[in-house]
Image (cartoon, rainbow, N blue to C red; front, side, top):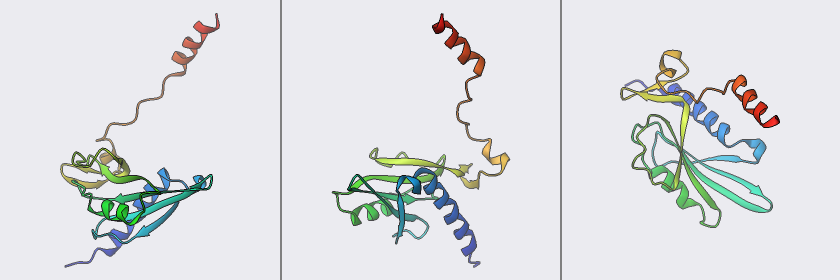
Length: 152
């Protein structure tokens, strides 16, 4: 059996990039990794202080096609209900999140997704084009035409 420790490490780097994208340090968020009951999942407690009040979020990153709530529930149980403001689960695009409760906020990864049941890295153009892209920006001519009618 070959130990793929370096592959696991690079996936952690991408997971932390996803976390920092959504929970920025300049907004006061601090990310503290906590032990996870699931070996492959990454679990963190996100916290910040806003106007003298402490906020904390339980966060789990799962690379499974059918993510489990086990890791996220373990992190949420470690926080007191007074400061727990939400639960977030970061998963690859096209992961099956139908079993995840509505109270849990789902964030889809930009760097990984499932294609034909396989986890693929979306930085390669051949993999990224399989997912719908965000809506195209509105053309400036359409915006200026709408503004002209109101100016008259």
